[in-house]
Length: 106
Length: 299
Image (cartoon, rainbow over all chains, first blue to last red; front, side):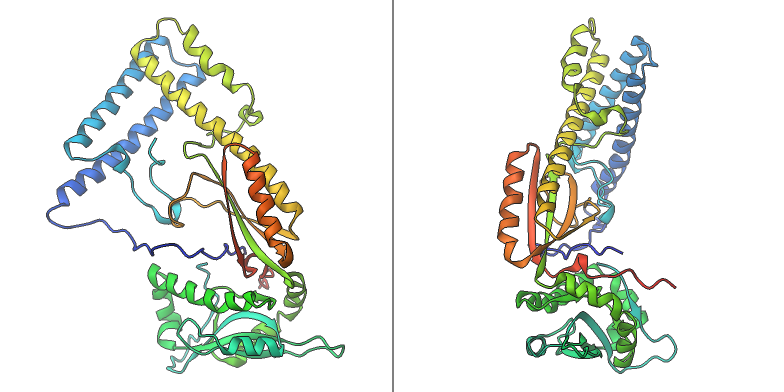
């Protein structure tokens, strides 16, 4: 039964974040949400690929193809973000006490 | 902070006040004077409620700092709804803290109770707390003359913990591999070069995480030597606590003698300077929130 230390008075109280549903921004918000999910999958694939490479169970050709695919995906993500005036760092979801869906921008 | 130690009526709804208990302390004239100025979470006046008698050898008895709060907010059902309202919770936590902190500030030893510890009436407070008096007494003795300080240690922003902690734990020799591999990887194709880049970044991030955890354990040692006790809390993740300098490696609370607070702060910050890869934040002094709670009586 450990209660955390008292919260140090934070400068400004943060309102709970909600998914904005303003009609003017709904398309961009939706795109942002979709891209966030795609980015999550891309990062998971990347992690899996690194895992396989480090495990040494890929041939050089396979490594080359996997690497190239991941690189293209990454580039394509950046293009898509740019089209909607987003940055890759903008793609994230605040899960409150659980932290963020994606690790902080790398 | 979101614990709900509720003991609210379930049978008959009532519109009379509910009793909110803030802290357990010794029943001294000084404490009685100090609480008289305070206002609680509902703006209510605070008073001392005696629940355990003193001993014949002159030890003062125990009391709880309590205040009446409206049933409309603190009865079981509305409380449940309120607890899900982050801004209500935040305001209540601050108000709770505003009762406890001034008492600690005056050097009054106390055991803060959990946020939203409410009882149906004063008799219930007496009953519940008196049943735990044998827990409270030694804890009060322990915190007397002490305050709580928080020490949070952060790694550099780009540090990440390794995914599996096996041979990496030793944390040495990793630098060497970094440069080598790309060198002997004959004619890296563009795809493999991309992967190599990712791996290099990952390794660097892990190395700085290891450096940070090593530094953190040195700092923890320094801090521990100056404190009467330590409680390790779960490192914070997410940004509930606002912007942070990097991933939180450790989040500890220390029980520090009142007269060595400055010494503690200086020594810990000096240790933080000495060891690389970390940022350290010392907070407090706080009321001894982390050292106040005996194990709940298990049913």
